[in-house]
Length: 403
Image (cartoon, rainbow, N blue to C red; front, side, top):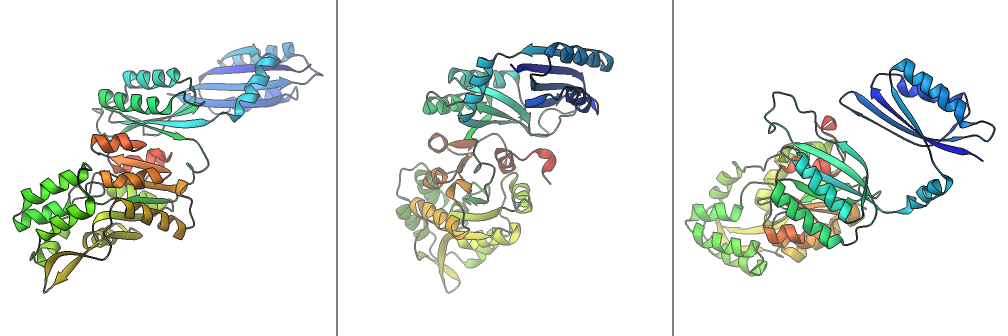
């Protein structure tokens, strides 16, 4: 009968340790059933699950491994694994897996404790933890760079809705963003990112800025806020707001477009998405005039938004063509995915308003970005502590791989 051993190796890391131990195992024709290695602050932890051939016995294998570990100044422990235990481990392979990502300005033990306890309450087991953000220098105040770790989790939550609510509660209490995604091939193969524009890609609501120039800021802002909270029909609210801008000269649009404030991390995010081969799009209830300016500035592939009617060098107060509202955003996302020959599971959508929710929930990864509570609760994922570039972490990109 084959013997199965779990070999656990730990100690100061240096080149050649894995080679040395596996070479010793090779002398006994050992089969490796599983292995995993991690290095934290120059300290190695290596686990190897081995099957010893029936022609050999475990005692000499363990003896030689212990001698080797002593010579190398490494701690080694061997634990027998029963056949029933091993079979149960093999049979658990079909369990669902999830990726839980923690994002914040700093990473604290309190945050990790809260998240890991929430996972344990749902009978989810943490298999591995990886740091995606860069190393923090000693002279850092903790705010110079983001902190991000990724948990690989096995199992099916008892109550996904309750887990999501618990994560939102922890996020509010601990100032950390928590994302949970099913770990599938689609998560690792997303190819299109669609952004809302106003208050998502840019740090402004364009129609409110135009209203200030036109002297009707308070009136338009009140309608905008009501629409973003989902209290007004978007099409009706847009027509009412545009009506208040009738007569505004095109020169006002030109002046505003020259000073569009991007949200934190927008340029870094778009640059890296393009570098890794993603297509990008703006799907917005805002205006194509400004979307095209951003397209030129950032190199965005597609722009879908509302067209302003202009006559005699001024706004008429009417839109041209079909208004891009919540339903139309979802339709455009679907059409764009089909145009790019992509599954919707390969699409990321980012927005901040109630009219973004259908689009966010249609995409494989929908992110409410610095959104109002009703939008955060309605979306599957939310980012409220960091800039747009933190989205790169949600697709598993490490800081060292970003430009």
